[in-house]
Image 1 (cartoon, rainbow, N blue to C red):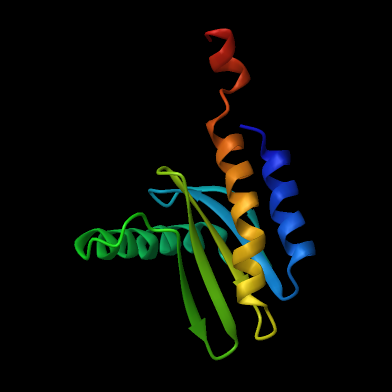
Image 2 (cartoon, rainbow, N blue to C red):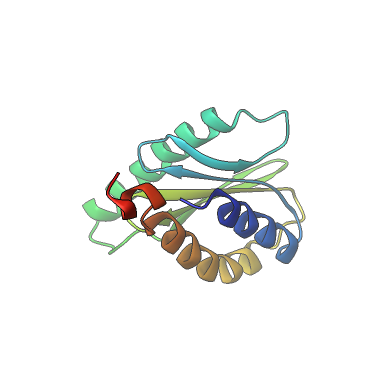
Length: 131
């Protein structure tokens, strides 16, 4: 997996959408893959919480026959956290302040999610070499 490419995607999203403060990519089981977060945020804990929340949202969508989960957003008094499915095996969490344009975030995120899914799905060098 190309961690630098993941970091570029996370930074690019932050540059594209005003108000993003933190981002992370995790496996669907909550294991952290990459993070661009402030020191005040525990990225491993964030990944685990995001996976739990996204898992619950996936089950809710399935139980109500609403199709495939795309995203869930949690609003707080100082901003919001958006959780996006990245294929079936990963997720991305985006934290934003009160000024974050959530609609703009959703528009900007889909192409980034597609690229992140491609990065995560790419065979590693060792796997490609049969090691």
